[in-house]
Length: 312
Ligand SMILES: NC(=O)c1ccc[n+]([C@@H]2O[C@H](COP(=O)([O-])OP(=O)(O)OC[C@H]3O[C@@H](n4cnc5c(N)ncnc54)[C@H](O)[C@@H]3O)[C@@H](O)[C@H]2O)c1
Ligand SMILES: Nc1nc(=O)c(N)c(NC[C@H](O)[C@H](O)[C@H](O)COP(=O)(O)O)[nH]1
Image (cartoon, rainbow, N blue to C red; front, side, top):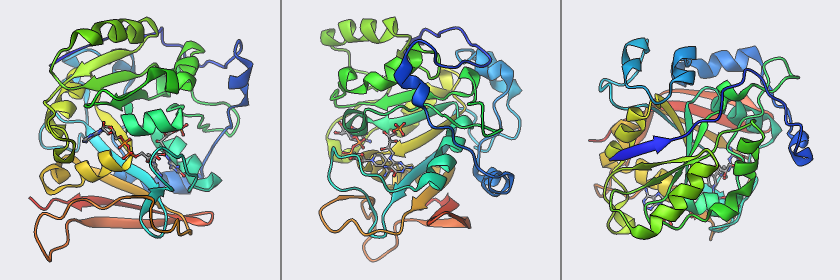
């Protein structure tokens, strides 16, 4: 495992000025009551020290109330939006809006509470995502760069195209988001060198961890999360897509997930979409059950927050 990155200077608050398209960022906020309802499922708030020294290994003593027994694993919040028929998009590669404005605001709030935000290469290529937050505590001023999560692109099969993620790089350049880190498996290939150089030029970086064989066997999450911890990441919000979610929900990985926060939208996408359903490890047994569950209505949607009771 090896990791490195370069960091743009941290500024307390920064509004996009040069790039006019960035001025159109919608400002999101949620009520104090909803913040309190979500609080039990969130990682401890980041300290200033952690925000500024994300690459330090000496930070471990600074963490209070850390929720995992093993100190080398970050708090993992698995979060996504699904339809009533358990689908997250109409077809692979198609961005499908499920969340209403209220749950979108909730997601933007969650993003301010995590050091990093992870998506799979399939989602990165499909969505041209922003992966920043335009959450505002006062309903007016969007949080500053210090509260912006680090985007992580999980790409064990090396299928990510940076060109399809120009929004993220633009936001980083404007100082209203961070440049992404590319997560690939350990095996080196010469082709990577040029790409890594380019990603670093934009302020991004790379994490190499674990091995990768057949796609249906998934990735080595523990090694990947461990490598994240080594870079200073103490909390990560994992947003999808289906390959990533179903892999994390399989029996051998469930103990790595700290909280699950799912938005359920009152719509049926109809068969043929991208489904969340982890592989079943034991016939005729539920694969996973949540405990400590709270259901919170947000506009027309409902948000379910809970913890996984690991199967293994
Ligand atoms: N509604 C939501 O909350 C939500 C969230 C995220 C994505 N989506 C949607 O999901 C769709 C993408 O889902 P997907 O499953 O095609 O893509 P994905 O984002 O899960 O990425 C899958 C690809 O990344 C690699 N990969 C990543 N993690 C892997 C793992 N653990 N094991 C094996 N391979 C892994 C593989 O190369 C694979 O092709 C898009 O349409 C996107 O809009 C919806
Ligand atoms: N909460 C939520 N509601 C939705 O209706 C929907 N389609 C997603 N989708 C998540 C999404 O597909 C990836 O996390 C993006 O790629 C993030 O993109 P943005 O940063 O928001 O631009 N998420």
